[in-house]
Length: 464
Ligand SMILES: Nc1ncnc2c1ncn2[C@@H]1O[C@H](COP(=O)(O)OS(=O)(=O)O)[C@@H](OP(=O)(O)O)[C@H]1O
Ligand SMILES: [Mg+2]
Image 1: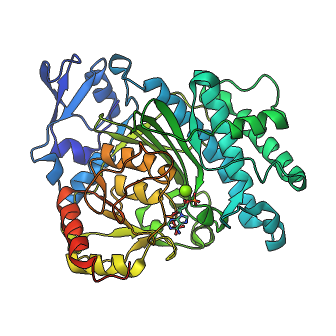
Image 2: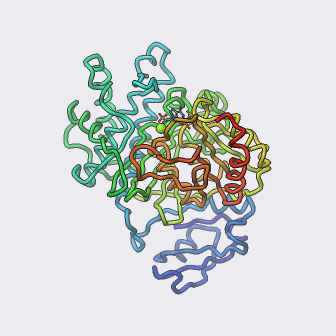
Image 3: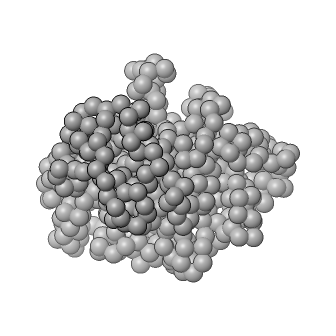
């Protein structure tokens, strides 16, 4: 049910409301009141509410967009408009909420422990990238939840982690810790309306849940894609990270869910990279509104919408779809006002090339450097206008680092392509095969075109 601020009601005095699902159907004008009670009476049983904007929706002033972004909808999928993939979406969102709770707990400990204790929590994979107890625990938890909901024979998952390190004899304590975290997390399933296991899972069952995620993707059929902790560096540094889950059908991502446990409620806090948590706790009290952080963002392909929910706290129950708020990309099209985001690590994307591109299109703001797919979330929430990533030649982007983000940005009204303007191809296995140079996501088509042509102009003279 939407609620409206008095400012919004003054600007948009009525809503066009559709009584049936036959779009555009019979539209009726309903006055908008600034109090919940009147709107509730007015809008009960009405399935679609089209806001009567006096101006073009894509052309709102910043203050108007804030007000639209601030609308509370607690029924993104009403019973009358049940859509394809609605059960998949519901289960995926709930699984990601659970994963967020698990990660928050692990990160709290990681950042509060001594360096020596931390060394035992962070492990190295063969490629030297870091992995923590949270990566395996989230992968086991999400795999178990999806298998329970849809039957393990129907669930195919591509995910980042395997059980190689965990299965070594020297990893016995680590495995015990993972099993403990998974069981603690699954015990909370009833809070989300999901079933908890009838008894705690044992080591074998946890290892099975992790290694079940061994799909290699492909161009036909349905599979899930999971990055249990994206931005592991940010995670271990007490900074931004994300849990990313997507569903791919016949090579196309159809559902995207991003858990962003440290996404601050205030946009300004996003720019404090490194030591984000320390800074936040120094400047605000844990009870203040600014401290409140964390969201789960999701979208379903073709719905033209993206949604955001705040994280669960304490023993509060979650009743789907809980309180979801629609999010939209920024309406800023002028490069001089736009902000671009990019990976924190120079090794993951050329900062000098993106700085040159930004300068040539007239972007003047400092880049927002964020770990993980929180960058996709920032574009979808309207907190930045452009995301660019240009990895070194030879690096192959993985599908789990992008699938959820693409669905969400598109749902929020933005555009994501490679640097040649082609959609990302999720149908070729675990890599984004054929990716042309880099990834460019934008709030609007105008900015996107400008950056694509800047890439064409400067690529040959770059060292990439
Ligand atoms: N060399 C290189 N170039 C480009 N990308 C790489 C590279 N190495 C790894 N990765 C993948 O990038 C994921 C992290 O990307 P981010 O955008 O979060 O980078 S950064 O940490 O902010 O610098 C990271 O995801 P996680 O491993 O889940 O953290 C990797 O999948
Ligand atoms: Mg990743």
